Picture (cartoon, helix red, strand yellow):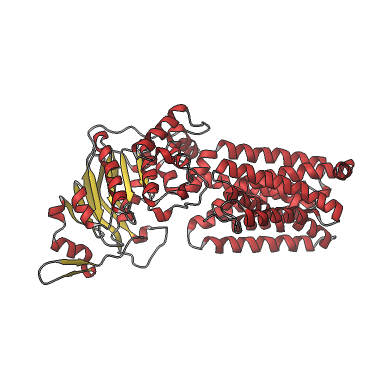
Length: 282
Length: 277
């Protein structure tokens, strides 16, 4: 009961000044520790092993790696739906469970697009944490919602049912929801999958607009070209961090072979063929 | 027409039945929108069946039926919640085990007592014309509590139902909300016991909400339209029962099903026969 009261009264912890936006230290997730609570006989198998890194304010990081590399697990740790078996995940110096400043934009396949909500309803959901229990959205909340929709160029869609939107519009609406949440750490799970080039470009323009506000962005993607071109740093993941840094240093033949292994073929003249299977992990 | 409508109202037991049917039609349909949107139909059906032993025990001890039903309803709602939390059994398997076992217990308990078939029929298919003034108060008060809870936790239930991960990042008390919803469903089943009975309960949760989902595109209007359909089904079903001399619970459900079929065929844009493009 005390826990429930604490949760209801809760509005998020203060950020510790001078701490990185996101930090992981020696984070390991063992399968036996329970992804979905399932204990396997593979006792020493790890979804992630000894992952350590720091991300600063306003950085944009691409998280790449083959299916099953642990991209979703990494995001679950940051969001706080999964606890590490070992190690620490901290956001501005505190564990994830205290924060309401982390926004997660799900893969489009995870959303029920027939749900009876309009675009502005979905964006208002991002405000529910700030509004608090037993209160209704105030004028300021509606102002934030409409401003967020304007920033992603979707103000004219406010009254549409979400199933009536195109893929690119759907993705932008969920980014608007993260803006309405006043997120400082934004996680996007395969946001570019299935989008045409103009729609991808529109997403990146929105993300560019977040940089002056110091919003940190992590994007899980299968698209190595975009990862190389549009991000400050690239994290190459396969159960551990194979490499993290500027794209030119990370996306080398050796690193890619280490991460993708059998899914990749190196041709005679040094060109690579990447046979990566898209995209629903877990 | 007027006399046709007014004639049944000279009987006070029919007036009570009408009020009960309207309340149940509204409460079931409003909560039913969440049952439909969250895919909890099997859970709702199971929960309705698991309250039987509680009802039978209360009946045999001479307590108000609602007390026994409420105790068993809340206990099984929590029990199913715990079973499915563990993850060692698939959710529908766990529900199936509890559902069938407790229903069998209820029937077994009842079979040991006197007037077995008639009593069982009342529990299974409702006894709308036997609603007493006391029953009506219980129905009204519990129904009001359910609607108040749905109203107070509206935005939280919406978030939890639409996007569970968002609920976590907003640090909503997701476990509390999930159990609250299960308990509200249990209370609603208790409220509806006399009107439609255990076996047809599911229809009152699912059918009006399903019809409303084809007609609306926002949750509040879906709730409103579902409530209208539910309340109308209650009234129309009761009149059908009076004039055609058929059992009242099935009559209410049949009206709701008929409305659903009409909507399914003719809903603007989404009906089978009027699909645009």
